Length: 336
Ligand SMILES: [Ca+2]
Ligand SMILES: [Ca+2]
Ligand SMILES: [Ca+2]
Image (cartoon, rainbow, N blue to C red; front, side, top):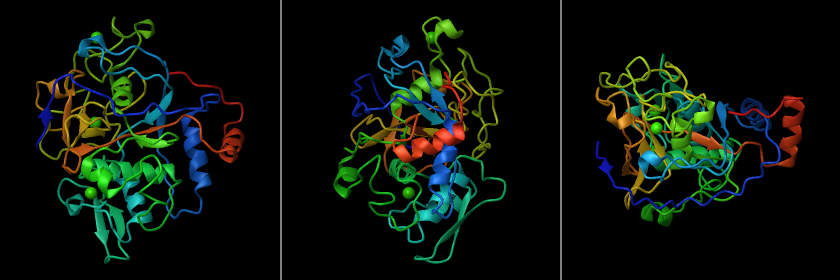
């Protein structure tokens, strides 16, 4: 795997989203509402999320005060995106796989999704026992298309501006080639930004029992780590079902190990960021640490690289707000 370690010359390409934070509901209710709202889709899925509170937190001094600060509230995927979730996406939009969302390695010894039929009528299934493994062999652009599909309400149809090519990201051949695409204002679901990922992984206020500088070294709410806490130092291909190890402070799983996870950062010219290490990361768990920052080519598709999504806490449409209100009832704001 080709990865490039870089220094600290990070310049965030990410525009701060304009969030409407007047109303927050428990993430699971939002997800349930979105599933119901998308009832015309053939295979609606729920992405479990946890809320990341403490907006306006300071960045981590350990890594030069560059990472971890997020000014807004957001939800983040409780787990890495799974094969079951990604297969539902493929069944919705990849009967003809215009943009190669499927990689035939997914049917191989490390993957978890098979494809049947021929172009125009492809269908997809998860491999027995691997439905809840994280999806792998996905490029950064596959991840952005998955996020667009969630943003658009999980529509069914060919890969186009209504399904995969617009929404949280406006995907154009030129923008992809130049690697200049950033998250759109008004996003509902997105691939995690580096700061969203970093905060969910390492942050815990000292006042809430965290480290004295509000950040742990490992995404396990700890400054040391063992293989009892995360899937690393494992044999090749030994991916575990998501959630096989304990959650961290914010309630996320597998931010350390299992599979690397894409983030939006442009680490070097044609790259995007990856963090957290994987099952194959060595016993000296340096790759899992907050001070390990990597990027790889945005088009790379590896057996140990997947992704996680972020969500705006609270749906954007008035109609959906009403629906959530009905479902959530008197549910109160949940703080992390
Ligand atoms: Ca692909
Ligand atoms: Ca610390
Ligand atoms: Ca991971």
